[in-house]
Picture 1 (cartoon, rainbow, N blue to C red):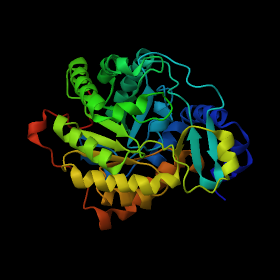
Picture 2 (picture 1 turned 90 degrees about the vertical axis):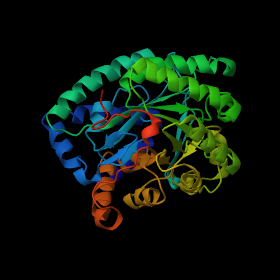
Picture 3 (picture 1 turned 180 degrees about the horizontal axis):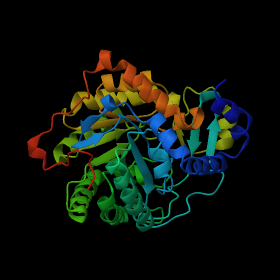
Length: 382
């Protein structure tokens, strides 16, 4: 049995999931200290052949860490040493908030799944900006030395106490604060854990929101900041199509599909246990089928230059390859990280590298539409 799996079964699964998460972050931070940190980084660094150009940014690997693991940008540096091609911080809100009452994170070990109702707990946009500014300075030093540096995304959401009617101004405040320190921004309108948030996926609400954030981000950063919208798996097919059409209309850079689900279909976990846990967003392998369906639908509708980041139910390199073959430009994971440990991403990157002769010739690139505005090239850093 692999070491991490043994530790998980004998120790971590006995701990409260949120406490285990904090311990894991501290362990990653400790492992970053020299000389161990440099040794781990050399061992986990993605194969250079995995690089690809998406949205005018060079990504060291197509596989990255989804939002949710590092909500406040407190573990970016140790996470970057594990080999992720990108790290998405957040979800971040304009104002600091504690999130929902505990317990709010639950394991479904029979399904290797999680249910969370965290409620966007974070220190607020200004605190995250300060951390990311310091992180970017350190990453710039690493890059100059030829070390691995992932792309940094920031996922923004609505502050809980702000009514839906005030959501636009709330998102604008976050975008203006965080765009200067982000390689890309994500508008999260699909978490099930903030009251009223999913109403913003309705086109009449989503259009003015995305238009305003798009303009505010570029103005605040004084450069083009790729903007994506993250959607729920619980949208109907017609609503997925409507979002895709809006993305085309606004010239958005891409879509992240999908967030957690409110469905409980297809689980092995007993119904009584699900009722005890209660509400929250479900993630894990059970989400793979719907995630793949939405990916297929989006790719058939969106132009080639519009990026799709596929997330939901990814466990293995083969899963990542399947998503890329179906038209995803990038792939994210999170729940698999919890169940398979810190070197999960290394195993995925190695599997991707072994598949290169079959699936790709060299590092894939995306054709860019010159009419979509100036894009950054190279590392995507500013």
